[in-house]
Image (cartoon, rainbow, N blue to C red; front, top):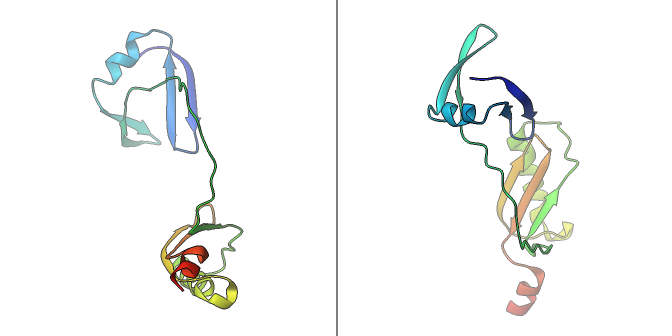
Length: 129
C-alpha cells in the first residue's frame, strides 16, 4: 500500500478508484489480482486491476431509432417481476394496442425499464402483404 491521494466510489458500477501519492504503489498492487480486505469484521475478496484512463479521438456518433425496439419507463413496482413482464408482453403483442409479435423482451427491475424487440417493423409487414 501507500498514501492515498483520492478515493472515489463509483455508484453506477459499484467500483472504487484509488489514486496514490506515489506512482509505483498501483503497479505493485495489481501484481496480486485478488486481495482480502476486512470490512465490518468480515474478510471480502476484492479484485484489484489497473485503472485505464485514455482519450477518445475522432469519435463520431449518430443517434438512430431502432425500428423493432421500444423502451418502457415508469413501470410501477406493484407485482412480481415475472408476472408483470408477462402482462406487459401480452399487452404489447396485441395489434389493438398498436403492438405486434414480440421476438425478445428484457426487464430490468432496478431502473423499472423494459425493452421489447419486435419480430417485424410495420414497413416490413406492409412489404410482405
